[in-house]
Image 1: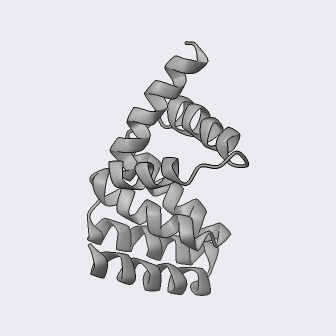
Image 2: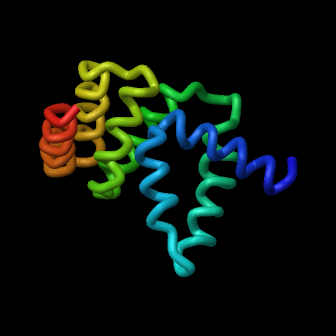
Length: 124
């Protein structure tokens, strides 16, 4: 697959998972400084990894949520909580993911994740 084909595939998946509105904002805010990074995440994260057939999007969302909770990437967590809902996870399933992450990542990480999830779900 060419870089352009990977980019196109990635942009499609990125829009399906994150929403057109989110991607449109990211594209509109792209600068000379961030252009290469935007191209990279579209081709590699979305065109290569999220497009692989080995896991469905629900499973990928569970893995992403857990990693973001563990690493304390709160801004990305909010974005991927919304994506998890679009990928078919229920609020009850997300609760279970956060509880499971709390067991292995720590109570403070789960506490913060629950706060962020509450804020995100109240907005949507």
